[in-house]
Length: 76
Image (cartoon, rainbow, N blue to C red):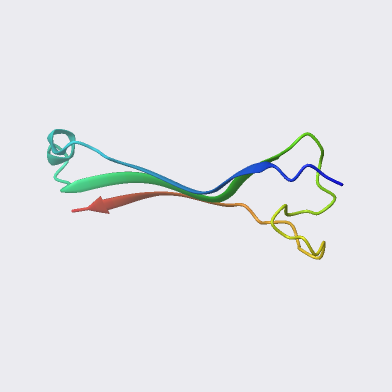
């Protein structure tokens, strides 16, 4: 028997748009920085799972891939 408790952060997105006071000096209408990530982390209970994914009870799952995206959107 295993402890079935876990916490997972599956998706997160952060973004920041620079104030127009700064961008207008450079003749730029808008500048936005962003980060987006999938499968950031999984914290399991007191025992490590024998499965790679705690949501998979068959034991046949592949490890979840992490995806990270960083970017800048610039509008002139």
